[in-house]
Length: 117
Length: 238
Image 1: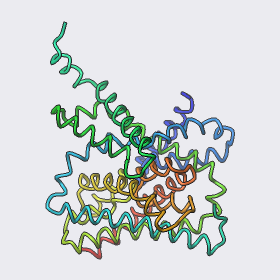
Image 2: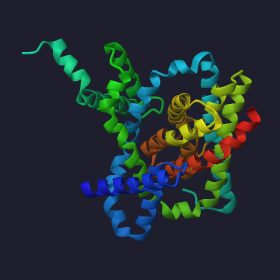
Image 3: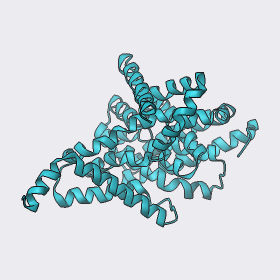
Image 4: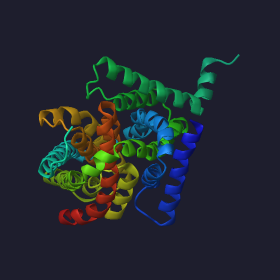
C-alpha cells in the first residue's frame, strides 16, 4: 500500500518536474499518468501490484473535488448580472457536448466495425 | 477545564476539524446517494459542498481556514490523476480498437462544448472577459485556468465555471444518455470525460469501470485539445 502510493506520488513528481521544466501546458499529474501507463506496459507485474491501490483511490475520486467545490461558493457572486445567462450556457453546452460526443463515438464505432459492448 | 467557546476557538483553527467535516459531509452525501437508489441528481459532491458551505457560513469560518484542513483531501487529486493509468492499462485492448471513434468523439465533443458555451452566452448578451472565461470550462481545472489567462478571461471565474460544469455533467449524463439510448459504456464514459472533466469522470466510475476508464482518457485528451483550439475559436467571438 505505502509502496504503491509512493509509485503514484513518484510519477506525479516526475510529471510535475517535466511540466514545469519544459514549460508545458499539460499539468504534471496528466504527464505522470501517461508515463505510469508506459511503465505498466513495460512491467505488467508492477501493474498487477499497483492496480488495487489505484482503483481504490479512484473509487473515492468524487470526494477529492469537495474542497475545491466549497471554494467556488464564495465566488458565485462573480457570475454577477450575467448569472442566469452563464448557467444556461453551461447547462446547454454540457448537454450538447455529451450528446454529440457520445453519438459521434457510437456512429464511428459502427462505421469502422469496432466490437460493441 | 476550558469552556466550550474556548474549545471551539481552538478547533476551528486546526486542520483536524475541517478535514473531519469534509469526510463526514461527503459520507452523508454518499449515504443519501445510496439511499436514493443511486439517482444521478443526488450528487454526493454537490451535497457535501452545500453542507460545508452552509457550515462555514453559519460559523463565520473563512475558506482559507477551512482549506488548511481540506487541503489534505484536495492534495490527493494529483496522485488520483496518476492512478488513472491503472484503468487505462486494464482497458488497453479496448482503447486500441476504439482509436477512431475516440478521435472523432474528442474533436466533436470538444468543439461543441466551446462553441455552444460561447454561442449561447453571446446570444444572451454576455460579452468581454466573462464570455472568454467560458471557453475552457469543460477541461480539468489546472489547464482551464491556464487557457483562460492566455485568452484574456478571468482564471477565478473560470475555476467556478469548471466546477459547475463538472457537477452539471455528472448530474445530467445518465438521464441524457439513457434518453439517447446509447448503451455503449465506452461512448458514454468518453463523452462525459470530454464534456465534464474529473467530476464527470468520478461519476462515470460510480456507474461502470469501463466508462470510468474511457472518461479518464476523454478528460486527458480534451485538456490538450482545448488548450490548442480554444484560443483559435474565441477569435470568432471577439
